[in-house]
Length: 301
Image (cartoon, rainbow, N blue to C red; front, side, top):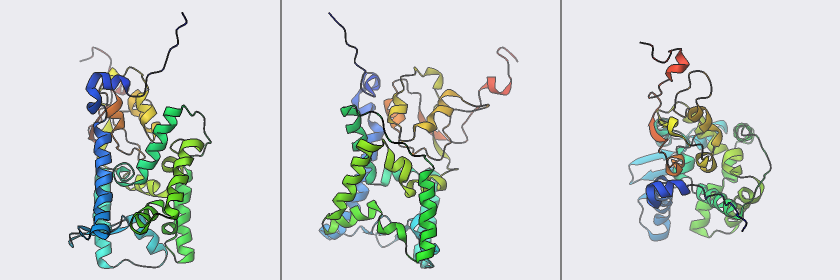
């Protein structure tokens, strides 16, 4: 009788070791965060309960807390429009928050489009779609730069004309209309054209927040990297898999276990799917260099 080997589903070992809930804890928390934030914005115009007024570009919570998207504010400045005092306070609060927790947590914990691209990635894996077009990860930085230059030339906050997050918000309130087409286009792009293509290669918002959180203290750490069994599940689920290898494999002289790359989204999926509990949340400062990297010989005193 012929034997056919089937590759285990991503995270299967983690589910066996930690149970389903333990292997999806951070994913569940992210979904609760994204849906709760979206609900807070929707409940006002749809039900008249105004906890939060505005959208992810600018919001006012309980008539006390202003929050302003610093990327939008920067485009506005480039276009020649200086935000009012309350808007500037909102920028300062947002910048401080995203600097501390890691800028790209916006992508994984706040942005509703992340749910769309994650769904495309899940379906792509289930359908076994392989291969994809290729774009440099630097493309999003070129787009970021172009939106700022174009805003300066036109005097318009240009990205907001095509921002899928803003279009989705407006669509959910006033009727989706063309917003459905934008969301569907992103879904199909990630499903058939390029895995993680929108968030990882094109979106200038992610590029901006990556730069903002480049030196943030809260990071993912491969603190138990010696226990790694090379199952590769963490690379499969990571939206920016290139950030894992240096910390996990100790590549480069004096490389500690903390993932320092700015493009890490702090999503926690590597923690979820690792059956050996290699990863955890930690601090940038807790990044001990292996003794072999600093010239200490085994057994030396």
